[in-house]
Length: 406
Image (cartoon, rainbow, N blue to C red):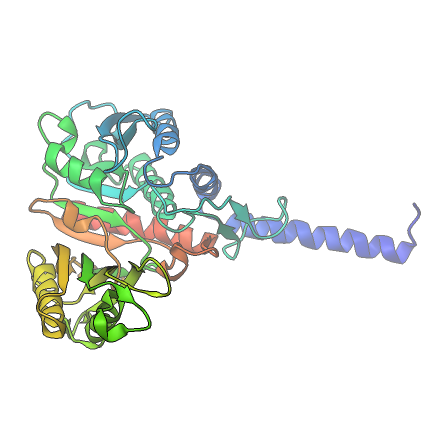
């Protein structure tokens, strides 16, 4: 194909501009950009719905071992209701910069490697050969919650150790299973400390969750209840001869939703989600039994006991509707969880979701921080920009240095 001299000049100019733009973008990129993007992609590519974290755990073991980390696996029992042998082994991944086999870290850097269903494959905006910019978008299940935190944390710690800003013995990584279901991975680590001898006695823990790059001063607590309403069966043409368990339950739930189960200036109101309602056997039969499953986000303290206070207020409402119709089986959870947010250079926030922060027991300072928005984290449009990931690397660097120096 032949081009006119004018078109040839335009093509050469376009290529020259493109080349200059590429050089500018590369000059503006942090040195870890390619490694960060590659790690994030590899993590998101692997399906790791709670209970099926084996493959992503093995990837992390190989990745960290190849980069001179000492890695230890902590095997975690199957999730409740799943018998042994139905799935591959589940394990937490502990790692620290080598070569010391007996770490004594000052700070624990942690997040979770499980995600909610369904699996959504990895994708990125633009064409595969388009240059990466801070506006490049990466999507897929876990791209935000919480594989973005995992990738940024590992990248940050590697940069600090390689640059000599942090001694290898100062920090430990912990990536746990089961956070999205029951927190069993972190609770297991809390009890065993990875079976390390001596057990690590860190002064601070940095938890990775999507906080939009702000340092969280805390998050709401939670409790859950299965509420069973009892009625009396009968023919629907004669409702006065029976008693509808569904009607009684619905009337009670409306009162619960309208009630103040606890509020505070910092955390707002306790909110209730009615997640499941079941009951009845046929449309022309007065239902004898109905069940509602609810979850409440608790806005009051203390951390140990705040959930029970809010749950007791719910049970008072049920008794007020009918003293004999209800059984409420409540897991009273916990109240509001406070985290340290007095770190220079960070904007602060309060978040409404639960985390593994209260599942790690001990006398340590707690930080909650990470890239991406919780508002997309469990949805079909879960996605994050490269700029958010890179900012999180720098944020984790600051937090690690602050925690070690405190």
